[in-house]
Length: 251
Ligand code: BT5
Image (cartoon, rainbow, N blue to C red):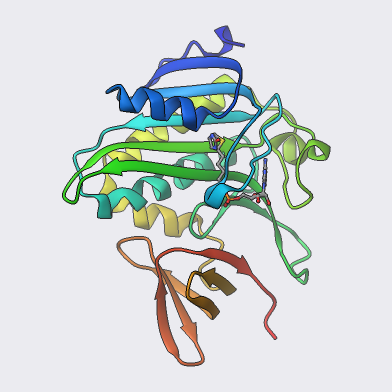
């Protein structure tokens, strides 16, 4: 498989058959000064989601962590997460999967039965970690986990995989596409929000967002220039910059 990853990519590749977490390894490389490196693994034994959640990462997936050192203030960092969601969605769509983005950074496949309480399954997730000063990012690690050639039985029940949707994909082609698209997005940061909108499942959906200071329920109408979600609630518009979002049935 290491040979499978002989990529002509805008990133140097470090490949592992098995590793704890590609994000942990990427953080080490970032701390040592690396840039434009991607850590890839066939399997992770300690994959991480946001907020200390566990991420299932069996053999056959695309588990990737990109190290970059963009010359931008930390307020722009969320745009890199959106860029990763766009890149992952486009790579999945090219593989034939009906992938869409659920705010802020989940790549999901809508279920045809949209009467269900949770009308989608999760194909991929993104975990961005950062070190920086007030005016400038030092490094970013953008962790991207895609359930590629994985049986659904090896995943949580709310998940799906490329294998489940359309059959196995050539991971070399998939990763190449993903990295090229991410590279294009980061070089055109001002248009990332528009690209994100193009693939968004959340815009127009009825949502419930759980955030630190309570729940916001209403209709998602748009995202702003910083990637925050604008929700129309009974008490007017609210802007949510971070939180867990679920699409829910209208009462
Ligand atoms: C995420 O967290 O969606 C971010 C996942 C990032 C994983 C990548 S893999 C490469 C890199 N190295 C790492 O160690 N991590 C990154 P969050 O939004 O918090 O979602 C986590 C939740 O998704 C869990 O609590 C489960 O409910 C569910 N989940 C766990 N594994 C899953 C999987 N393989 N597919 C779909 N859902 C999963």
